[in-house]
Length: 240
Image (cartoon, rainbow, N blue to C red; front, side):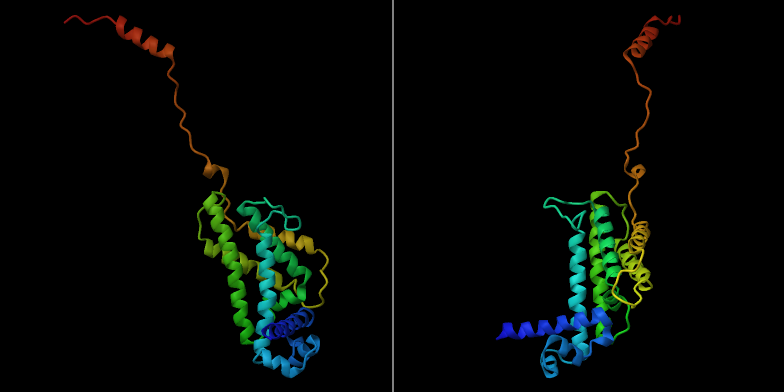
């Protein structure tokens, strides 16, 4: 019985996500979601309190999926062809996470715009804050790893992580204009430019800061020591 109820609830939420991905939050009315899910309108209300509850659940479903994809991609240097023993350095992981986030957003603009910036009710806005917190935690962990391995200089990883998430979100709002769901021309170039700009905020440790300074000393050779000793023994004594 519970499994059937859970399946119905999931079908309703998935239907809402599909509608949001094609038409934004206004497209996901209770009646439209019920029709998309193949259930009666009253069934929606049996599983979710009201429209705000429905949209918040849809946001959580879509945002959780996107964060999982980015997190998993950050664990490999090649998210399309991961290897079992692939353990990238922190900088590579940060770059892959940024590239995955931006690339998916620009190739699914309508849903990305809904998740990042489209005005919605207070329930969705609350979920949006949690969504950004999840990304900040991901980048903070990657930055902490870079500091621990010596790849990055010591810095406030909370601040830099927040800056990365904020920069990505702000830079994408314009290109994510809700026109259609097709990737705009020049998407790859936009991703490259955005990733490059964000990586400049990551405090990579330069070789000069990691090298151990050496002191050049004049070598004392055996010949030098011998010459000094001979001079000391052959020097004339002063007569008292």
